[in-house]
Image 1 (cartoon, chains in turn cyan, blue):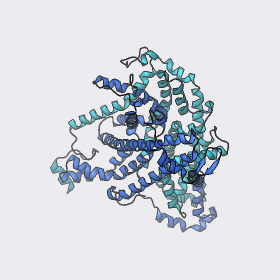
Image 2 (cartoon, chains in turn green, yellow):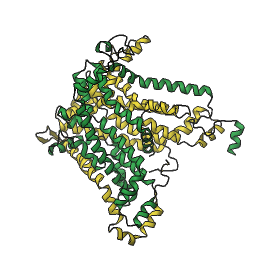
Image 3 (cartoon, rainbow over the protein chains, first blue to last red):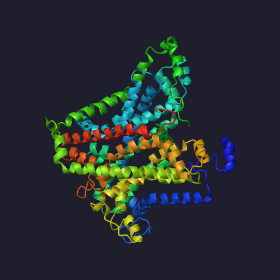
Image 4 (spheres, each protein chain N blue to C red):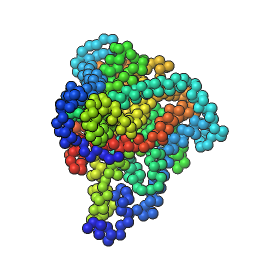
Length: 296
Length: 320
């Protein structure tokens, strides 16, 4: 009956996803393109602005009106930004923290997610709910005592406060993501393995983990971003310059070189580039990962 | 990838539980114990890094502590903050304004972008990437980029305004426009994860609903209002709650761009909290601020969940 109705209306756009609108005329498509182009241009202008500034000399930076294509491009600004402050050290520090923390996060989040996904025990749903609610907890409410704890352990100005929490599940987001994913893996696989005498650890290691590569990659990506981006953590816990991460290093750069905006912009680009490259390389996983958590 | 349609697996439970003798050969523990073992890292972390500290900061909020001497002072911190600290109220007002303007605008913007990207046009992946990129920029770098964009004499924003004959304000340097600058900057990221979630939500709306609406003669707007919005309401709800909670904690942009100035025009709540804790070493006072923030957000969240039953429409009942 429905198809009869559609035919009589002469609607052509069946099967096309068009946000509830069944009229996809060329005019509407052009309007969509126009809006998309305008929007995209607006959103990317700051990027262009940063890149052009990074390639200018100091006089050109403050010239009015601003030129868009600096002539000649000062690629040396990048070298200078990289070396004026110990950026290589900052990057190494950040990578050190990120790699170890990400490893810890993937390890423990998958263990915890396995526990929530595959086992039934008293209070499981309550605990899962509690875990989810921690996503809504403002971090400031635990920030000070945690700081005092690390201070008591004399581990301020080390990387420990930034790495260790990752080994305790590493965040509700990852646990949630992995748990949802584990739920989609058929239990028969688990059971077959159990009949063969496999322990739960073996099931986790040999069945669930290999089948969860997409979700695990997503966790790795988001963990990398979170640690690369982290500002308040290193701000609170790191005091010596040689321990700084890139985010703190960058803000230090700005304090010291505030007039040399071409260098500040170059340094910012150094901080931005890895995240963009990472996204380009792994878009699929990003998008899927975000979309999955959206289904509450 | 399909969303987990069957999340219970209960029939399977009885199968496995019917074979306990075989299981006991493989392991001597009951499944419940294994479950607890596996979640123990989280549970331990929760006790050490969340529950414990929460109680500790509650206690601290009733004390005076400057990293040397700890003294119980009862409700004095709360009293001082609420009655004798104008900066506290300024920071609260600033943050409330920030949230009030950036969250609804941001959500609307994200939704609009998602609607645009949901059309079947060529190159949608490229556009999606371009819109998403700003949200990938680390907060510190973003702050620096925008500080330069907002530069009164040489920034691109005032230059663009000048091209159409408007004399742009001093943005971050002017107490009247500084907060607005932060709000504008926060909108740069509306094409990010939130938008992706909306997009996924939009694509989850069954075509049949739109067809039925069209058959009933619904206009574009009516179709949007009565099909799209209700189907998106869980996503909207999710984004709204997390958006408010997240925006209330704005810190990095204020810290890097203005340090709270000029004249406390951009002194945000968490920034003031940070200063109290790590610059003035008034850890008791900072803890009191933290708990008030928690109470505020909790009240808001509970109110939202209550109101949700009225406007959030779940297809086929609870998903949890």
